[in-house]
Structures are given as structure tokens and as C-alpha cells.
Image 1 (cartoon, helix red, strand yellow):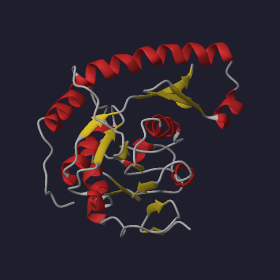
Image 2 (cartoon, helix red, strand yellow):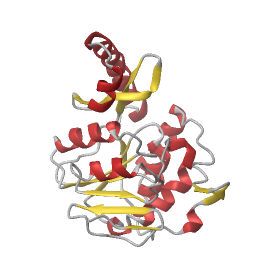
Image 3 (spheres, one colour):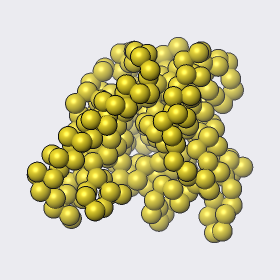
Length: 253
């Protein structure tokens, strides 16, 4: 059974609680809610829930761009682990871009959200057109972010997939399925905030789910940040270049 203390949800494959609750000092009290100051602050808070992965040679952090990269950067920095991007694109509905009917990821994976499909009933032609457009953006992103650097090796590694939040979970589900195809030793899903039911659902396909803040009602990821300004391509490249120069080792999480 899941353990939830102070808003924190942390699950292993057997539902056993694996870490103490998040320090409330990581959050700002704004109005009636606690919120993260920004993505970097959220990454620091998240890393405290991942401290058992610190300073290991078999851990790789894969951040989902763009918003997951500042979070993943702090996780990688605090754990002393290498970081790379793992490009995933949401498939939005024309006229409702905030709703994801699914997502695509590196490796040719497409995951559909059956609930959203049933509710809005987009045509197959519409879904295919959106998918083609997003494949172009996915390939562009991989070229732009890595700047010619090869992907990090995944086979036999513990992969920590990081995003800035988990709403429907379609993006993260696509990432987990794609990473599984690269034969890692273990797949860990990590995000600072997420919908409780989404975190529970991801536990079925990931070896571990770490989500320090699971508010109910959830509404949207951006509501749980004071600063949720868009992460730019330049910021993604800068953070990746910093990590590529060599991860900080022996850093206490």
C-alpha cells in the first residue's frame, strides 16, 4: 500500500514506503497552498528523496525537456550522476493543446491516452497529423539539445526519468516504455509534483515512483510553482553542457 506523509508519495514496486517526507522548507507558503519557488528549487527537494542513488556508478538521470531539465540538473548535481535529455513530445488536440491524447518518445514509441480519446473523439487523420508534426519536433530537439554529443549508455544502468510534474502521465508513460527497450537495470520515475492517481498508475510500469508532492485536487502542474516560466532551448543546452563537463561527485543529497 502507498505511504503518504505530509503530501509526499514515494512508492516501490511493492508499495513500500522508501523515504522520509519532504522537508517543508523546500516549499513556499503562497495563499492557501505550499508551492515550489521554481524548477531548480523543486529539483533540490526531489533529490532528497533520491539520496539512496547518490555517488553510484550505475545511475543515469534522463530529463524530459524542456521543463524537466532544470529539475533533472539539480537531481544529477546532488546525486553526482551523469544527465542526458530524453525527448518526449505530447500529442495535443487542435483547439485544446493543453490536453494530451498521447505522447511519442525516442525509439519510435507512441502511447495514447484512451480516456481523453474517448472524451474528445479526434479522428484518426487528426491524430496522425499531430503525430507527424511532433515527430519532426522530436528529431529537431534531439539534434538541438545534444549538440552532436552521443546519448548516454542506458543498458544495465539505473535510469531516473525526471520531469517537472505529472499531470495525465502520458509523457512519462511514453518515456518509460521507450527506456525499457534500451534494457536498463531499473527505471525510476521522479517528479516534484503530480496527480495522485497518475503516480499510482505509473507504479504499474516503473520500478519506483518518487513524487514528493501529490496535492488533491491537483488541477495543473504550473499551479504548484511560484515561477513556472517556460524553459528555453538555450537553458536546456547550457545545463546539458555544464553536466557534460563532468558531474559533481560526492555531493550530499
